[in-house]
Length: 113
Length: 111
Image 1 (tube, rainbow over the protein chains, first blue to last red):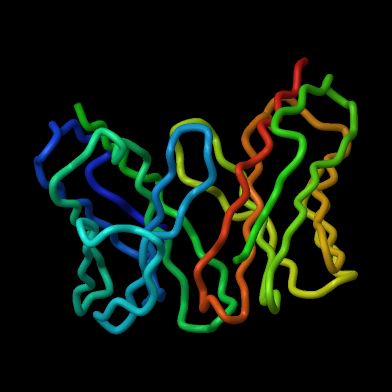
Image 2 (image 1 turned 135 degrees about the horizontal axis):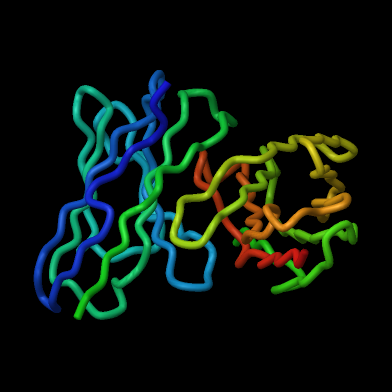
């Protein structure tokens, strides 16, 4: 049973560029959430997708946007990159129950120079 | 606003030296409290979910407990492979399924 997968593993961009990160949820899961984890800190919630719509959003600017596809996979897009966007970006998936455990992928390490 | 505070920030133990990690939380209507383990540069690995005060769960050398204000992760006779950062997160009733995380406790177990 494949777990949550993310691509790419690492990414280096320069300020002002745009980036797209990808996530495939665990088999049987239909809800995907994205988190940002700065070095030495806990993950911060960005947003959640269910039924191809953004259902919840954390305190992140509109530069952060996403998409969910019919197969439940998801993309995170970040425009106009800032140095402060350098972080580990984590995708988590769960079933549709309200307290179902969220399972995390390995993350994408984004470095903005 | 939901808040999670973990202590200590870092903990060094000798192999076999038992200890506990603390997670204090302030949340309106707790739906679930989650413990994860995270190795450097990797995604968090699920350990436990606790739903109500008094609940306890165990897995190998780890035992998680929950009260109305805090959770403890007890580590019995730890081994070097238990070295990792342990993250606590809460899910609140009015916040849907989003998780609010603490900063984590970095555990090092020396042989």
